[in-house]
Length: 251
Image 1 (tube, one colour):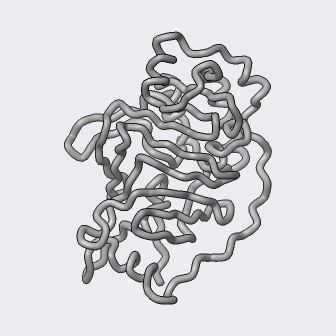
Image 2 (cartoon, rainbow, N blue to C red):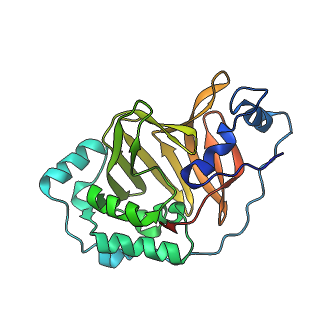
């Protein structure tokens, strides 16, 4: 079977989205993945342990967001413990990205850092996200871009902690393209990544376009690292391993 390669966020889902000349877009590979005994997931490969990317003792000393921002976060994120939210300054956030870049880590390594699995939560503002995006390529959902109907979208904030990572957008539902692949953000503009363990997250609020007949929009449900740069992706239309994931890169 031909290997599929893509860069950035789209790489993880290209297996579901590839087009062929004789079938619906994405249908052939999805069908092969579900064919009787025709597909086997690659065996997991031992991954080298990464040093912590976040310094929780230092981060817990950050002040909370202002009252208006905190109220907005509570309105956007069900169950958020507002008393344990800290605002992350640019210097600290950039330190994480620099350590991730040096370690050749991925966004899954950052999202599932031990510091985000406990009761504290850390808010990264739109201004900080924009500054990081100008310097680094994270490989996850774009911080900003254009929807398929020509409107702009913007990640307004990110909250990591209390066992989850929340990506908050300024639009309730929208579709966009990356590397010619189509994605949809829904769930009232909130993409939630539940931390299941190191390099392993459940996902709510994000779909990838597959086959118009077989599975138009596949809800992305889980992503888990099999090795340093290979992940398994589970969707509402099936699952498959051996997908590429890129390390954090400098622009």
